[in-house]
Amino acid sequence: MGNIDKPWGYEEQVLMTQVDVGEQTGILAIRKLVIDADEMTSYSYHETQADIMYLEEGNVTVRHEDDMKALEKGSAMVIRSGEKHQIQNIDDSVAEVLEISFPYVPGDIERVEDPYRDERDSEDSENSEQDQAEN
Image (cartoon, rainbow, N blue to C red; front, top):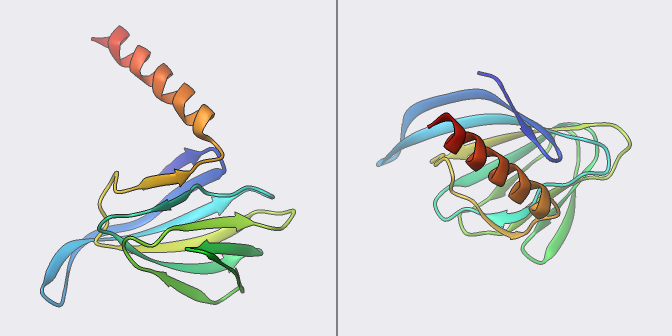
């Protein structure tokens, strides 16, 4: 499905499919987050989406609400909708985290703290200028 570059590494879309879970229908998404050494995602939450974080490779710490928890290789953690979370790679090699989301809603992210805010703002500005030039 392709990779999406992120300031902290990249996201690989593994699976996106429509499913029924109980009485709820939505998109089930599985993405592999490849987080570079000593990098972290933004501290954020999702209004609708819930996630399961499964550590495949590396050493990470998950900031979940006000707690810090080391996630061990081969273990998982549930993040419910509305819960703030952040993944930090605490190793000198990449970390690989499977993020299983349901119902996946593109753009359903509220960043509370973003170490890459300036970089994202710069990219958004460049993309906006490119869109205007193409129109």
